[in-house]
Length: 322
Ligand SMILES: Nc1ncnc2c1ncn2[C@@H]1O[C@H](COP(=O)(O)OP(=O)(O)OP(=O)(O)O)[C@@H](O)[C@H]1O
Image (tube, helix red, strand yellow):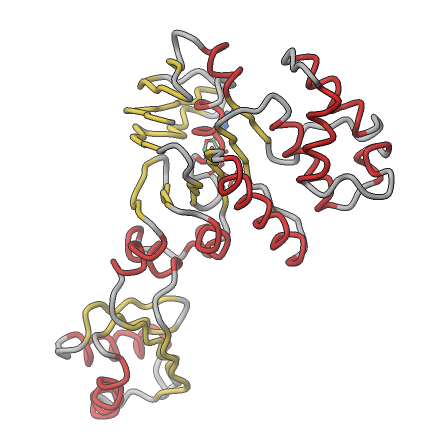
């Protein structure tokens, strides 16, 4: 459904040149929900805007929904839906009018029936909701209206730019359910950007992680988590009369040669260890730290999360980077 090779975009302005996207290759199969995950400024929106023909690439090629991005942008636009960050509705126009206008723009036949169908599917059919302008809707309703607008012309491929940003947890869960249904019921391919790891984990069949304009990891949520196999042990260090940096260094040195420790990183004053079989190795780790005179304030052990994957592939925490 999407095949992109070497897609790149450079912005040149008063303040110099920004390489926003630096040679992205990606493939998305029909019927997949693919998440494009990365911190602020990683290049997600720029990539999305290129794939949806809103921004010309500086380099690279892509086929989107069966049409060549450069040779036939109008063909691409007819076959995709795009829901921008913050949507595109006029807050003062009744929702149904917005949907009718969109249907006319795309020459949709049987527009009334299509709008009714979408309203039913996206729970926009109650309470005369479609008679209201988007300004009089809740955040979740407004996002569902944005999605309905993107789907009026029955595109097989839907792009969503940060669909749940700003929604409360309940509305996020509800929107996830709707996105899953698009795939399961209609076979719609969905390509979405997010900086929420839990969203990518819960919703996506496959995740692409982008950092500083390049894809740094890719796979199903389970595959990505397997890449950081083992357990993550976080050690909060005590003061021990030395500076936090000295304590962290001493702790890292004490554990560097430990057979169970695969990686040791100091992050925000804590020592983060990737270890084989955390439960069994924990006692040995504590002993090694104790022998090196390192005081422990707290110790936590957890299964790896996508945040750990991000940390492993980029050397930075997604939360710090964002
Ligand atoms: N029109 C522009 N002119 C100059 N620089 C730009 C422009 N658009 C984006 N950039 C820069 O390109 C980089 C990538 O931006 P982009 O919006 O694609 O990131 P993003 O991953 O979508 O971030 P966010 O999560 O904040 O939306 C950033 O450094 C941004 O400042």
